[in-house]
Length: 138
Image (cartoon, rainbow, N blue to C red; front, side, top):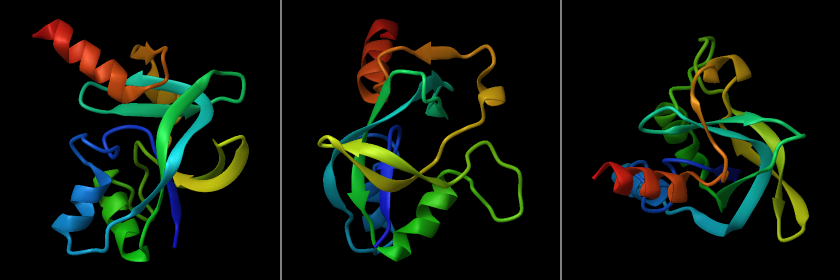
């Protein structure tokens, strides 16, 4: 069962909520392991964030799930990761901090070159940032 770190629209309550994605495809629900962090910079792409991994940066918050194997292609589709094609997001495995220890997780970062001119989300928390941004715009 793969372990994934989700930091943006795949988080609970967001537009691509991992649990809802599993339900839509008739796949067993993922199991929430806990909240984790990874060193990086989070950027606002408008309707979703992008994570640039950066060991010298602050923490980016997200949720860690154990997912059924059948859910992995659904995540690749949501993130538009296709074999043999250059895409915005890539899938890779990185250590993520969970309760003071590192656990290897699949995650979907973007290249540093993709975020030129975008707003950096200094808090490292997409959900809190999006809610505040949307409330200010209302």
